[in-house]
Image (cartoon, rainbow, N blue to C red; front, top):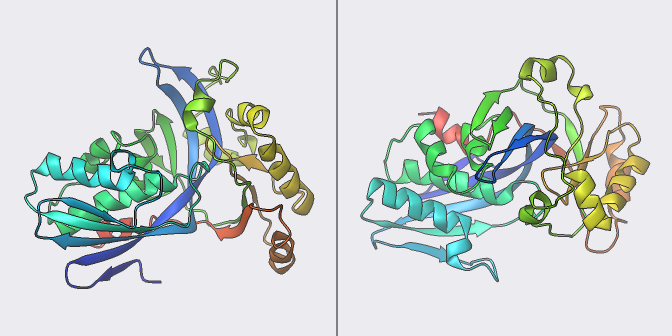
Length: 296
């Protein structure tokens, strides 16, 4: 699939998911925001976003997600924020085809919001730089700046401190056990680890296999037994994949060895518990929507 399709005043972009190769919580600010360290890896599990410029001075969402009002819809909020920031006098029609599960710890909503900002920056001819887009994106969510940064990264602070990591494109086995976990539920838990010792990007690059824990995982497992079941499922079918949770859950993943029999795994995925979603995905070097920015 092409990364970008241009048909008159319409853009179609892919919005990739991400995995947290590790996630440490190293502190908490006085305003309640948690201070994190994490390695973010883009994967080729993508939503598809279609943006069409319209003359009416409005943001129009077609095929909205059931149960999500416009004021909570991240693509609508992203478009409105950019429109207000640049005082844009015309509008956009937004259609989003979801493939990434919601509440899964895969960053789907943040990726959709980032692609909306990237696409409208191009469609509306705003010429904002990535730093400015990240400042806008941070208002939408902590993961949005990463997707705007557009490549695999070591992320710190509340998500705004981003450094590029060497490109890796391993294969992953990802399982979503059909349980939506609210991020707020995890981060408000009194038993959540909030004092993990900080590490350095150089330390992670030197020994990435030494950093494979997720401080949110213990809380998620306690509140959602399906997370533990999914971790055990991966450990059983891919014993050397170091299964762990992504983000605040509930998705879990393992890193597949190049010698792993993908055909056998795909057959096993047909027998997941009812409602679970499993995929073998490939790591990406760059956000496909980011190619639009980098090509200019």
